[in-house]
Length: 99
Image (tube, rainbow, N blue to C red; front, side):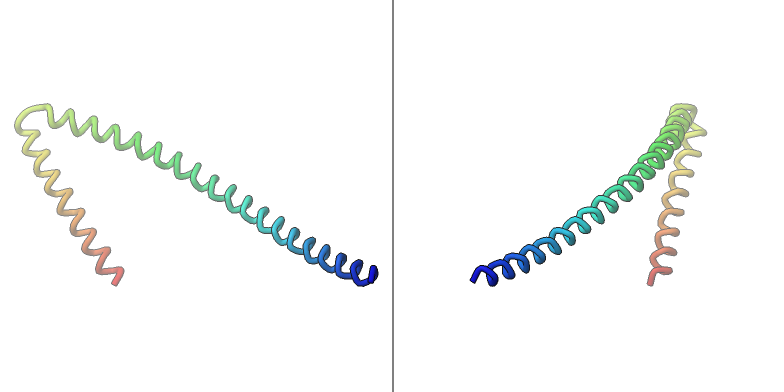
């Protein structure tokens, strides 16, 4: 009877050890994936900071132009309409290319 219990106990211990090994492997894979995603997000953060700097400069120039004389306001209006049209044309082209 004791031999049967020992065999059953060893079988269960081996089963538990294999489950622990699989969980450890899974935890290490999750850790590796999390580190890769953190590196990716750090890279995106620096990209967004550089874009923010570019947009800030553009907004400053745009507002300076808007505050100046009437001729510049006409130019500003024309540029705004042109940018909106370009955006819609690009959107149309990209949507056609996707289908």
